[in-house]
Length: 201
Image (cartoon, rainbow, N blue to C red; front, top):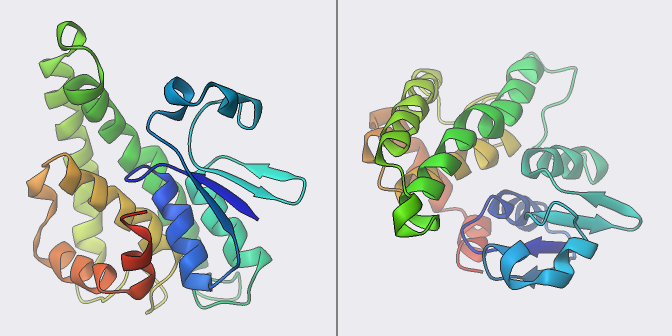
């Protein structure tokens, strides 16, 4: 198994999941964005994005899907919530929400505040999508009220996937995302050995 990864990118979700499960894997760390600095990488992942997980003949490029795949394929593991559990639906919802709803607006904040050349930066786009993210992030604070983790009364792949969205928010200085329940949750996440083993690689 091999994971292509850029430090701080969405591939952190997949790397963190691999570390939590304790799987053997090869890590290929690339400079961000890989499609610019590693032209040959597009022969592996035509999208030019990270993550890219190779597992035998399988190629996967979506970070939340990789987490779901690893939890099922290499389980049983408490990181995955099963269909027999009452929180299975919320678990899947958090996995998909983590990227489609939460990380998506952050990528526009990142692009138009830092990645584009100075003359192409768009402060209004940055502000609009910053607010968009925060509006949707409120659901995380609400979900953590009276809970240590997002679902199933334990740490799961949902916490990894949504946790990355908070990690990125902190990187982008979207400090309003760190509300009281979120802050307590985040302290639990960042203390995990697997997170510490992943975050600076």
